Length: 254
Image (cartoon, rainbow, N blue to C red; front, side, top):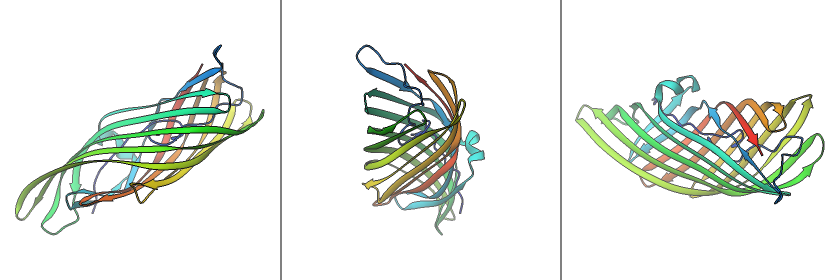
């Protein structure tokens, strides 16, 4: 069965977000304030395709949505990441909010199809430590929390009539990961990041890779591919989804 569900999240890493840890800093050190702090903001667009199972109060559906359908299913989205660095340490906050709606093909005999409306907040807060930095390469290790909130409304239809159900869930997972960046020559660079964790979820993980271009000492742009997987179940609420697709973004530092 097939359902068109969609999320959108943000950050040139996640790396979130749209939602996970952000990218490493560029090869040249970012400008720093008199206090020794430097800052980074990174908006992005993540065209996600979804695969897995989602449901509420026992009404579940199989999701198989290509990322090319993102525009038709997205009602509203906000995505962004902010990082503050001091020396080898930094703190990242990455938030993503999206509202989506579409038709829904249910896994059942009594109800076989319907409509859904979903609101989702995805947030990551991580503490990052730089273990390597030279003229060509930087490597950060990080640990933190991934937070999810989903409000799901389903109108189901079948031979017996129509039923409307709704539910919302909030959960948190601990994550650990690493991010790596190296120069490819000139203004070009390669960036990869990944993490894994769990807690309220049975398992969550993500991986990202992109090619970036350094416009100047304060601005980069990048294009890549990101995958984020979450396996969460609680009573009749199910969110076992792998989201993957191209990611396009920019970052500014000061």
